[in-house]
Length: 38
Image (tube, rainbow, N blue to C red; front, top):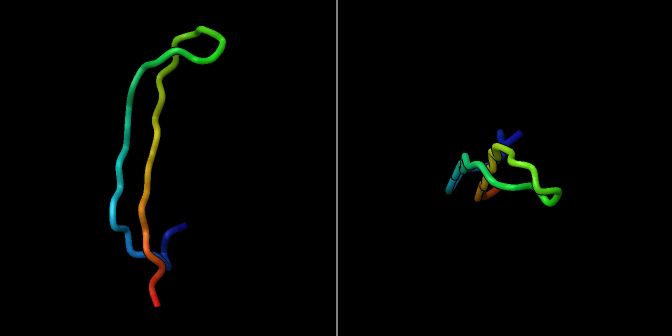
């Protein structure tokens, strides 16, 4: 997926939170900052 990119920053969040319907859920959220290689 990121083979043509240099990963500058990678952050994984693992938390329990309430959905919009009021149910508890475990969330895994990933944030990636990458620069395309030349």
